[in-house]
Length: 251
Image (cartoon, rainbow, N blue to C red; front, side, top):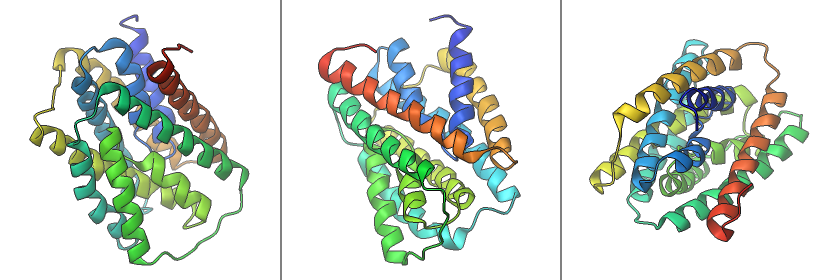
């Protein structure tokens, strides 16, 4: 893959995902698996890119006063230790990508449903329900090597927990803490592998894409169009991972 094409791809991945409060970890994993041979280097690099993008997004949401810690803390506090534990699981490369692909297809399905369901609701979730959901998604995110917002956000949007921008703010913050916890889990498990010479140019690209996407997410950008495009991208990535690692088929 061209040395100029790869940073451009990562820029647009970061742009699309950050515009709806995500970090892009799932697509980073898929693309990195094509150019990096070492499994744990793929996971480490994707988590670092994820962390960089959502740090920017969270800062933007805080600045625009969308961030609501009183509502968010049960999701986050209980997800951190579960993401840490999930990241320490020793999975084969095939099992890892099949789990990730299946989870992404399910997430894309719920994202698609949310695009069709335009009506916004504001349902109250008890702190126990928020904690349970946060812990469950946190563990899955640790296993899958991503921040988990791509799983949490569609569930909350579909259930009508809050308006889309509040959910996007939570997703960004959720990914931030879970990515950091997941990286800590990789370090403790002696699975942290990072090639700075290869990754730094791509890191600059995702920071640039994440900055633009996070800014536009708080403007008049049509969030439904972006969410629909993101659902298509997520579905493609999930299907590709399952076909490639489960059946040896390329698409």
